[in-house]
Amino acid sequence: MKFLWHRFWVWVRNILIFFFVSSLLAVIAFKWVPVYRTPLMYIRCFEQWFDGKDTVLEHQWVDMNQISNNMVLAVMGGEDTGFLRHNGFEEKEILKARLEALEGGRQRGASTISQQTAKNVFLWQGKSWIRKGLEAYFTVLIEAIWGKERIMEVYLNSIEMGDGIYGVQACAQKKFKKNAKKLTRNESSLIAATLPNPLQRDSAHPSPLVKKRSQRIQREMRAVRNPGWGAK
Image (tube, rainbow, N blue to C red; front, side):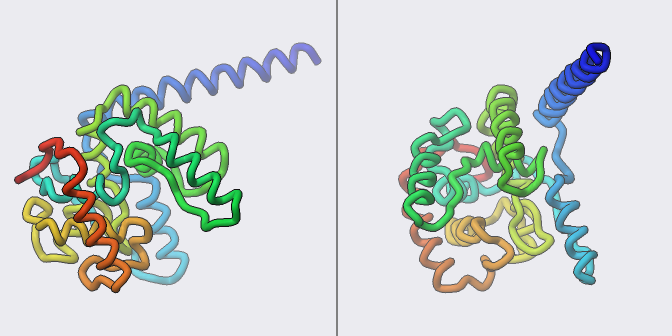
């Protein structure tokens, strides 16, 4: 029995070492290598196939200098105003969301852009404690290894922005018939306004709710610090 327990813990140790080394190497590689596919893209394709729909996956990687600076400001204004100053986590927002849930309020996310990027690139959707723990682990890694500009670049290239649409370049071409480099302040804020639910909200044909959120995001865009990334 003692021998079996020893073998078991050796296996556990080896699995943990393999996970740590492979995940670290993956994060280091993606500091420079474009992220062409993510787990969510494959999951959505499977869901489309399972529902008997045509499989749609529109995605085109573009470097930061091919993305409008308006888009950078819009996602910070709409998703994470403290992006440039936090270490990957917004403790106050997490606490606020927990308190609202405990008081019977609506369930809302409190994930930063860094956390969303870690989830999009390395993990799956869901709310289990295991996934959240892995998300925190990868968030720490990308904050330490990638830095803010690379996190933003990967985020804008991997985020789901519509049914079968991933990344700002594919979204700009599909919704506004232009490249991401040419997105205006208004177009960028409309795209950012759909991000809480891009499968139900359309930046090209915005509902009153999306328009109202877009206006709020434009106000936030004036307040957040401009890091100067992206095309002017």
